[in-house]
Image (cartoon, helix red, strand yellow):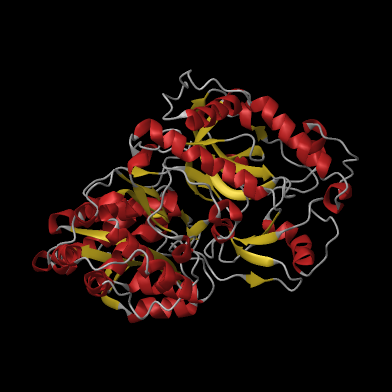
Length: 598
């Protein structure tokens, strides 16, 4: 596509000719959503016409939307498991995709409690790379001068596994970081990392984190942005610095690398980077040795302009802690992606976290949307529901995302609930609402993640007078006793131990949470007595760090790890209960009155 880089983009003035082409591409894709989507579906159906899956539903080579919608069912992962297992076992026939399956991408270990295997094809790397290439041209519209420094990003890979048929299975980010797209990427002044590839690609999480933190400290004055994939990952890095700053300072003072870092490629790489610097070592000691860690990010990396982390959905609860450590730096959520497909990007990355909306790029896959009221009812494979196309969505409404991908997923329910907030040209923009799963239920009550999050936020207000905040939480429905009750585990950040919240205040937090929950819950508590008083168990600091370590030891990806907002696995519950320092119960019944029936 020929682009006149002298013309300003409707999004803003590009920083360079390369950015102009990227911004023009975004404009082209978002203007012609309908035709791009038609082309994408036609391409997918044409290339996969001879696959076993499409032939099963007698598509007979048709590539139009009407035939596709009338014949192909909407499916979940469980529906596709037999086909996926055959591919995993070594069946190389064209089952889902006419192109060879190159590997499996493993979903986050906390998505519906199991690690799903998503088949992918080699060319999907090109599609992911294309979306990555659009992020900095957009960011450059809002933050000038990013080519004058570096990004301190904590990025990690996980050791690969293989399926019985010999295909590699690994998280999507491990796949990308191990690809030539990342390892041999051309130099781009706007996208220079402090972390060497050798550190990012080391599967030992301690050695990787240690080296990445060390490089970030050495290059502290060059760092213009600090990030990780999820907000929780960045907080893990800060925690790592709290534990390891003495050894890191020693390495910098002496110019010799910690003996615990044994990876040969890292040691060779660091021999060129690490030189004795007593002044820097003393600064790190000065900043890290005190009890106060407020604004530690800007104190260590004074030129940081923003944090690059996902703080939408379940990650929203980390915002106050990140604000504490960063002194209120902006938090940029740049893109929306999953193991199944990369979806789109945030065209206003410096907006407030509560205002983040993602624009789905119509070239990435074929997108359909199930109105959320339909999403709660069962779907019949025999009579596919009428889904809404990308170009026909309505502002304010919530939808469940359904995708058809080049890799062979057809009308697949991702499980994400999105709300349309507006449009950029003809492309709808979405707020991520939640993952479609109920978290807690004792009886007829059903509490989902946003509701639990809101209840915790409301209860946290009572902690403000004590300069205390909830830094991490999870929950479970305790049904061992009759009646059952909700148990919420809290890890607290108490900034002044002499002014810690009292037992009475924490009991009131329990009641405030109950008052924030839905009417069915409160009716069960007040009228039916079928749910007991809500309980908060305060755990030792560092407990959720241990929880993450445990999950990683069992195969979770450090990049994709999200704290489970509800737990039921006995070893995890035993770990949490062994770290409890105090227990608190709701001291009264929440308010409830029967609704008037007409």
